[in-house]
Image (tube, rainbow, N blue to C red; front, side, top):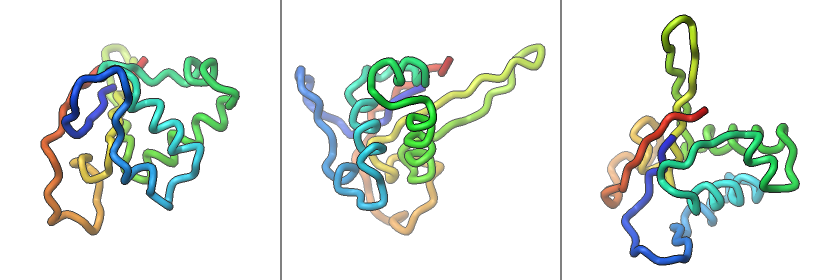
Length: 123
């Protein structure tokens, strides 16, 4: 998994663009999960059981929020077929759907800041 963000200063505080928090199409649960994921290091792996342990939400709730983020362009999941039928998922979190090159939206002509990109495998 990776996290794609706009450039920021290195501080001990989380800096998140307001646009994701002001996105009226996202539930508060999805905004909270996105905020948590954006506070994690760039090489953070999304593991549902780990997210469940870090909150009062159950698996269904966490999966629902992740699906909501995926449907809104904040998360991309890609199935990777490995050796001997092994399947893994690579997940990338985007601070804004405009940073997601796979997201189709009405704002294609807008310029977005150069993202900081890191990728890692999801377990």
